[in-house]
Every structure is written in C-alpha cells, then in structure tokens.
Image (cartoon, rainbow, N blue to C red; front, side, top):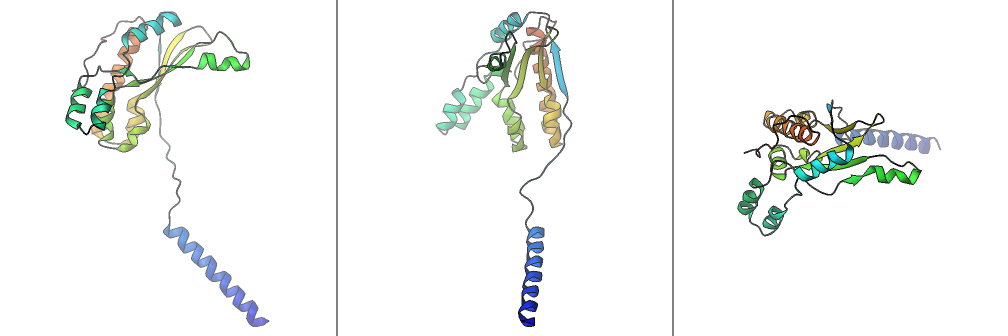
Length: 200
C-alpha cells in the first residue's frame, strides 16, 4: 500500500511538472493590447435630412471593377482601376440605427452608420501590416444627438492605425484624417477644401 501511495504521488508530481512545462512552451492563444483612440465629432449646420442628402450626393458608391480584375488574375488592371477611384467611397448602404431601435418603442431618432474609404488607400496600409484590415474602411456615424445637433462621429485613422508604429502607415493615416474631415465639413455646410484628389 505504501508503495502504491508513493507511486501515485510521484505520478501526480510528474504530471504537474509536465503541465507547467507545456504551459511555458505553448503561449496563450489570447493576447490583449490597450491603445488610445482619438474620437472626432463634426457638427453640421444643416438638418439631418439635408446633411444626409449632401453626403450621399457627394459620396459615390464603390466601383468594384478592381475585384473582377483581381479575380481574373489581372493585378495590373486592378491597380489601374483602383487608382481611378475617387478619394472616398461608400462601401455599402448605410445601416439605420434609428430604425433599429424602434423595436423598443423609441421613435423619431436619427442615426446612420456608414463605411467610407478607398480600397487603394487600404492597400497602402495593409502592404505594411495586415492588421490594418481591422480598420479599413472607416466606420462613420451620422447622428442627431439629444440636443438636436447633427454630427458626424468617427475614430481618427491616425489613432487607430497609429498603434502599428510604422511611419509609412502614419503618413497615409494623416492624409485620410484630412480627407474624412474635409468631406464632413463640406456635407455639414462648412467651408471645406473638398473635393480632394485621390492619394497618389
């Protein structure tokens, strides 16, 4: 009996050691990183409907010809198509959060979520760090707040992409910050340098 107890204890010690060695050799599949995000809000001088109309009239739907060319194994043709795109494009119809919350009996609220960007610009981020895929295109909300002020709100690309610590990415993000800001100033009825030419 004493021998069996000793054997069991020895096996337990060996199992504990093996588990510890494995835990040390194999890193956790989960890793966390805290980043600082700069949030920009641009008030509109116009009503919600007029601001939306100005944005929609200015912002074209994304021309996806480049995807067809990529699928046809024509990267040169795709690059040419990408370079022909406007500086900013709408990637999909806006999602209506004002309508969504009517399921709770909340009516008369205005909130639209847009995805805005340029896949050629996105490629300039991704070529240096594929993690940039998380942030392109840019998610933008057009809302009417509790005080009746219509606003564009978004996280500045210089902060989201800035986490990668790559000056090549930072340079593109600075230009994208400006493109978004000028577009929303224009749609909001403020002086603006929009339209801007696409990035070279």
